[in-house]
Length: 98
Image (tube, rainbow, N blue to C red):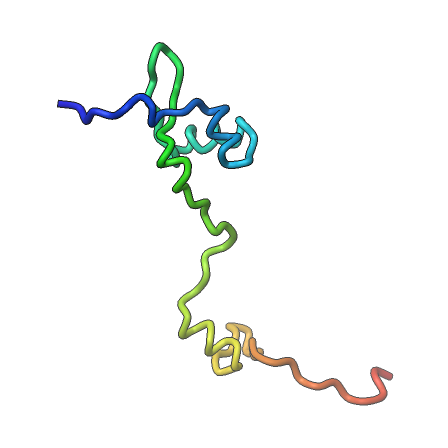
């Protein structure tokens, strides 16, 4: 048997957008990506209030590398594939190029 829920716990996408302080299209995008679940009643999608309130957005950006290697790169202990150091840069000579 399906799980029962209280209809009072459901909100529209417009109400979810107001609750989160974002646009309705942002909520729709989260639904489309499967980040928020909907229940369809009378042909209209509704969201669970608790799920909208507890939603945590992704950190975003590029995934970080493993911490030990990142620490080694920061200290110059690991060299890049071309043989140059990925750590601190070398000081330049005084006087510049001739």
